[in-house]
Amino acid sequence: MGLGPKSVFTVKEARARARAAQQQIYDGIDPLLARREQRALQALQEARTVTFQSAAEQYYHQHERKWSSATHRQAFVNTLQRYAYPVIGKLPVAAVDTAAVLRIVEPIWLAKNQTASRVRDGSRRF
Image (cartoon, rainbow, N blue to C red):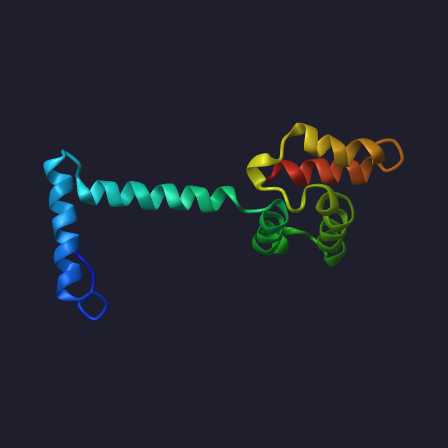
């Protein structure tokens, strides 16, 4: 198990890290596994904080070449900017549920059915 580069940690700090790892072993904890689990938990926490707007923009950049025309690409962006971002743009993706999508779609469903369908479908992708 690496304790870190010597350019970053002093000998005293490295010894303290080694001692902490040895204590974990004596307590029945695998320090390598514990480190992996901690990193996985941190990655999960970071993923939970991704906002809907950020996820939608990432999706757009990864898939924009698939749309057949510039008009379709721009319609996707405009629809989200006008209807979805003001309501759920700042919400974490994990918090976007059916009720949140309905708050966007219901006011425009009868007057702009195509737009509402596009917003609903775009919201399902995340």
